[in-house]
Length: 371
Ligand SMILES: O=C(O)CCC(=O)C(=O)O
Ligand SMILES: [Fe+2]
Image (tube, rainbow, N blue to C red; front, side, top):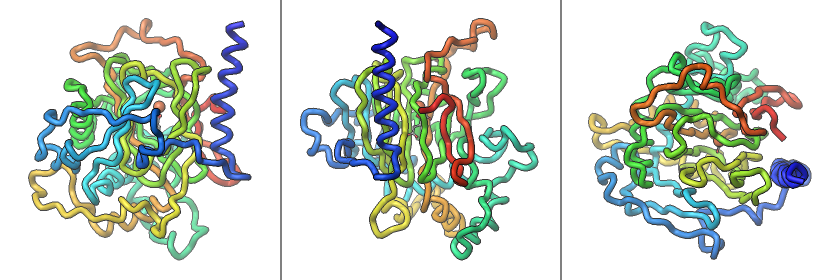
């Protein structure tokens, strides 16, 4: 009995995933929640209070964020601990995080999907190696794919081991200070004063990319939230429940939006079945067309992106979305358990394992055991 209920439930999530992934005919998006139009979701979406005093205007500004009192944050009926913040970034500052994801965080010792089948010499400096090819893109549309375009994920801090589904002390490199600072501020504003960013997974999506149904449960401290930052083209994000048969809520994530999964929503199933092309007159989302004027660069974490660097990022972002998820792995002051006890039993479909494969000539990211 239980198994058949589960199967039906699994089918429902999988069906919805396939529905939103479908190309022909394209799906109807009218049931997709849009937090930028919260008034259209009366009874489902509620504004939620943030800790306005947790971060000063000055500290927010240094991280490229609006003063907290100007932020718009929402909760969702049926998902305690889930918070959706619509783009709190100051004009132009999203560009900085995009550039970091493409130019800085791709550098060694960080690990990326290309390291799974290429040597370290081949994958180091992948930004520099991709520059000539990226510069050709405007004139030669069929130019061979650069390493940057083949990038699917990068791990930071405690580097997630996709095979064992664990983090460990021996796979650690210092977490980037700038993203640590941003995450600490966002978590504090959401009521998590002690959050410390220890691991990051950056996902790079193109128009044909998707991310399978999964739960992020490998972190050892589930009392801390999971933060998710989105840049570039929009995504359909599917939010399920603690079990696969729970109802699923589809929502848009636009450039600059932040999701916080905490409390009872920390371990819910979720997926990204589709990237949605922006249909405005710009080749990249409006918020990436804005420039950042940094009046006080010495005192700021977020820096202006040079024109030269942005040209490459802009070319890349015309067809892409980047998502950064930030996690605390260990309880404050705790250490990893011994290896034997660290072997986790993983719930069905919760494995976070990427499979980088070619389909119809286009490279796509998927988690293994995807739909
Ligand atoms: O791209 C997203 O919005 C979700 C990413 C995610 O769920 C993950 O990295 O675990
Ligand atoms: Fe996830």
